Amino acid sequence: MELRHLRYFIAVAEELNFSRAAERLHMAQPPLSQQIKALEDEIEVLLFDRTKRPLHLTWAGQVFLEETRLVLAQVDNSVKAAKRANRGEIGHLIVGFNSSMANCLLPDILQVYCARFPKVELTWRELATSLQLQALRDRHLDVGFFHLMSSMVQESDLCSVIIWEETLIVALPENHRLANEIKVSLQELAEESFILPSRQFAPGLSEQIEHLCQQFGFSPNVIQEGTMMLTILGLVAGNVGIALLPANAQNVQRKGVIYKSIAESMPTVPMAAVWRADDNSPILREFLEVTRAIAKTDR
Image (cartoon, rainbow, N blue to C red; front, side, top):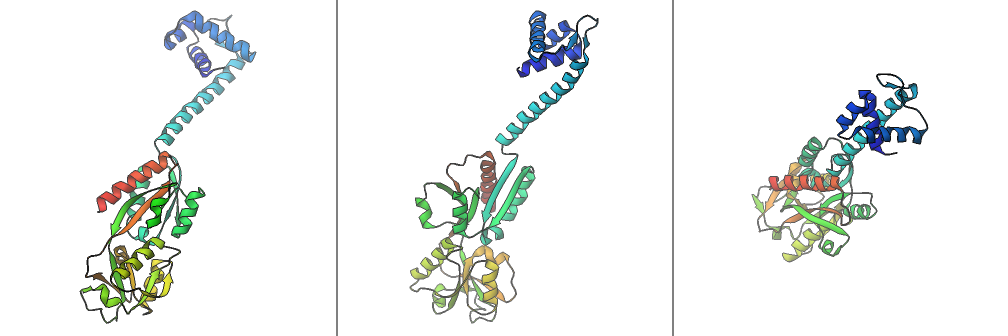
C-alpha cells in the first residue's frame, strides 16, 4: 500500500463519484477505479457499496476514511517537522560558556536566538575550558565558548572561530596605592600579589596573562587562583591581591573593587566558539550564524 492509494481513496470517498474524483486527481477514471479495487483487495475489505447511486461508503469504509485522514495528516506534519528541522528551527542545543562570555555577548545572543528560534530547546552549562573540550568530544556539548588557547590550532577534530577580542584591565582594591591613577602601567604591578583565573578553568586566559607579564620582564606572583570571575573580584575586594581580567569584567560592579585601564598597548584576548568538526547540525549552523552576527554588531 502506498500513500497515493490513500489519497485516491479519500478523493473518491469525499466526491462519492469516480469521475469527479478522477478529475480532481488529474487522472483517468478507469485507472482510478482499478486502484481502489486493488486497495480493497489488499486490505480484504469492501470500502464502497457500488450497488447504490450515488456511491456509498460501507461502514468499514467510513472508519477507514477517518483513519486515513489521520495518517495523511501525520505524514504532512512529519514533512513539515523535517523541513523545520532542516532549517534549524526545532531540536535541542547544549551550549557551554565561561564567565567572560556571560558578561559580554551571551545575553544578546540569548535574546536574538530565542526570539528567532523559540522551538529550539537550549541547555546552558557554565564549565571550565577543559571540561568543555571533553564534553564536546564526548558529544555532551554541541558548542562551547571560552578563551582560545594556542594549542587549539592543532585540534583537528574541533573547529573554532574567534567571535570577540578585548583588552585586559586591572582590578584593584579600592584602597590600593594606584587607585587614583587614570591608567596603570603594567610594570608598576611587578611586585604585586596576583589573583589569576584558574589554569584548569580558563587556561587560555591564564596563558595570555602570564605571557603578557613576561613580556614586561616579570612573572606574576600568583598567590591565589579563582574559578569564577565573581570569586576573583571578591578576593580583590578583600585586599588579597590584584587581578588582570578581560575588559568585560567592568560589567560586574563589585563593592570594594575599582577597574583601571593599562597604560601600555595591550594584545587582545580572543573569545572563541568551538564545536566538533563533524557536526553538521542545522541547529548549530543557525546558532553560529546568530553568534557571528551579534559579535559583528557589538564590535
